Amino acid sequence: MNWRVTLSFVVLCLGLLLVLNKGFGRDPHEVPFMLKGKPAPAFGLRSLNNGQLVKLEQLKGRPVVINFWASWCGPCKMEHPVLEWGSREFGNQATFLGVIFEDTEDNARQFLSQMGASFPQLMDPRSQMAVDYGVAGVPETYFIDAQGTIRGKHVGPIDPQSLANWIKELSASAPTAQQ
Image 1 (cartoon, rainbow, N blue to C red):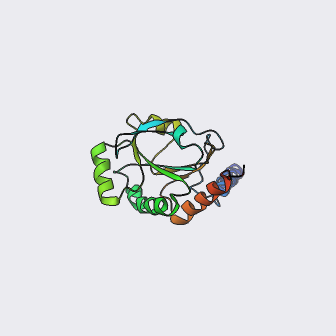
Image 2: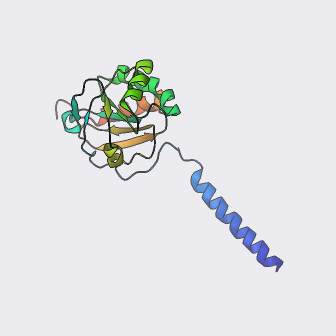
Image 3: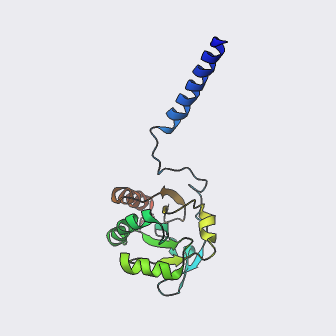
């Protein structure tokens, strides 16, 4: 009977080691998702700032950074200054958009009045855009190239270096004037 217990323990330990080995060494922000390399889902949402309709098709020809956030989200509060910096620093290379996730207009406006709003913020009233993009929680940031293809996403609060690297990658994939 002892050999069965020992064998079971060894098998359990090997299984645990296999699971741990698969998890270690991976960046938790690099979450696989089905839309990578596919055309970004179309959207048309109203801007919180001025009520104008913003459509993805209007933005083709330029890289787009889309950040899903909410006023009730603690990590979003930490991340927002990075996005504000990114919009100021890289706004000539990419269009930045915020998408308000599962929140009210009043709460979003109050958040933005305190934190700043240097780029358009869009209301997603029924979370349809979030569903189309596969948003699991906030914050999540999506990177779309100038051709309208999703190049990747960042789960959790993005840091300045990661944002700069994504902008560099999107800029490298943008068509030049000679093409």
